Image 1 (spheres, rainbow, N blue to C red):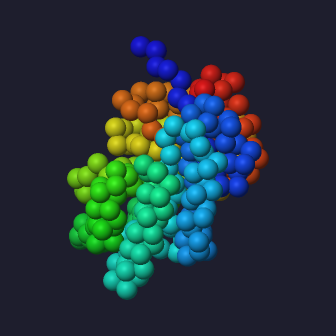
Image 2 (cartoon, one colour):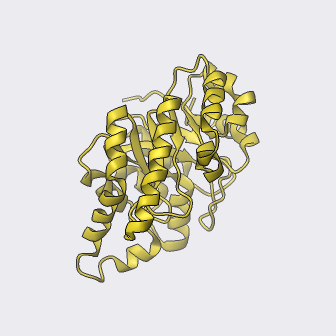
Length: 273
């Protein structure tokens, strides 16, 4: 069976829309707004930025998401005082997502390399991690459900690609799914002996709703355009093609001036349109 090529989109800042919006609108490509990662943006006059984004994306009928807050905290924090601050950050992020008209918000996995080596050492540690996740994210999940938004949990240090899948499934909600960052998975593969990137895609299966596409060297979080690193893109896109759904697919690069070049490379390779 021949699958249609996936459409490659972009994760970017609102400033980048000044030049890239026509390309995104012409192809009705997936868009992810990343300005609201910044605490300054979260605490500032975010409504003005939202209106600017909506104006620049006028005519865009493709899928729209945003990257949620993550700096300095875990979505499964065990500290009740810190938890209240995290709840506020997630609430603000979702308020912004609603105003944008986004249908996804990316959050970061709480699982680390340390987790992989230690969660099975202490009885009940895995269960407690999920309990902390519910205590921290429960209100955000309800808010997301109310507004038709999906919280997608992105791998960061994750060595076991199923850990955050178990966390997502534990909410028993369509408002929680998983995300893959290809460069993060490749870092984990090269540095911590995690499975290769395509295994992360296959493990996520029908729960995979979002992918950050970036190339890397297996050592650091490079955010290079595809073709600059050592990820096996043929294997990754074959795994994506085998999925029963089409996840949001966005380039997330360190240098957004390379977004079009990154997309063109994937297109030339026959992996995307």
